Image (tube, rainbow over all chains, first blue to last red):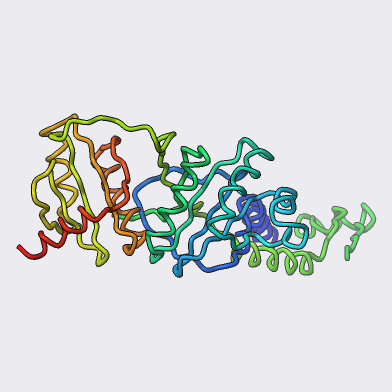
Length: 140
Length: 168
């Protein structure tokens, strides 16, 4: 049995080291595909999610910042629905709290372009000139 | 659970000869079954919960200020318009718009970029269109190595151009 245990232990360590738990999501998003192979940074991200229905959610990775932005009761929620009007102020607050924050746009494949355009306008207005769009890798 | 096996007295072992050499050693036997059970359980857990592909991202730079305008020669301007039904129309400068299939876009962009390296591409997507179209368009531009492009809101003039292209 020893060799088997050895192998199993090895596999176990491998999976334990490589695993990353997918953060819980408020809404289901189907990502569009692209050929870009730039990886999403693991920390210091601010994710703007746009659902199929055009609803906008904002999420940040640190719990502390979430409490600051959305109030103590929303601290444990990964992302919170926001209005377009609030978004600008939240961007500014978030970036004051953590200047390293990167904006990430995560839109559903079927999301209408209108809200996306609005979010980009708000980003531009708040001087967030660089952002990333989450996509799936397209295999061709 | 471990069992310790003590060897017999030396003389007895010697008598038994080579056949029973094992018995001479002091061996510790550990019952590994419970450990293996737990390890297997953990292994299955990690195997099922793990996912390898980290999401990919596409980077996009926005011009710093909305008021800043850049003068470009009209002849260098390639406009691509996306209608609400996701059909694509393209035109150079102020030529009438022409319809194009998405699959042909790549070759068009390559050809345009080759014939005019100073090309500036303007992508106008209708608000009713989908986010997927925007990602696809930017992806195509990136694939064609066109780094100078901008996204512009669609106005009435663009809509009229699309209507005209559809009619013809």
